[in-house]
View 1 (cartoon, rainbow, N blue to C red):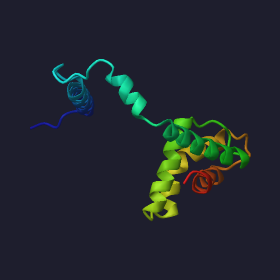
View 2: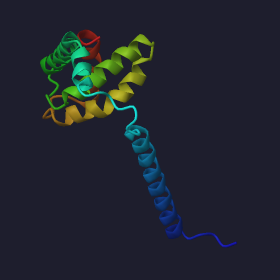
View 3: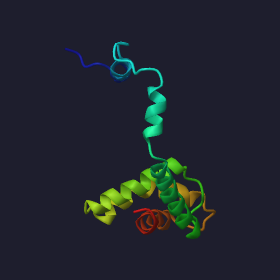
Length: 142
């Protein structure tokens, strides 16, 4: 049996990945569409939104604001979206509480640290910016 050419293998791989992507999207879409039988009654969205305490939102926003302030004070440029800062801070807190070594946490923060350093005008190295993300999260977010 002859070996398929590299071009054939590439095309086959691309087609397979495309099919997997379409299947995955169909599964996710199918799981979220529902049949209409168990639809929420009118006004349920308003009740659900009202059930979320505003103090939780305010507390979250305050934590992110403190984290952003600590980073800015240390020279980290204001280039990371608030939602990303929340995810980074929350991840640092959870991983620190679980006893994850700093080296592992820093490895996950490295892409954001490198981006911040690249936007700092040479004021920060990637390593220093990454360390700032970790230290500021621990001191102002956790």
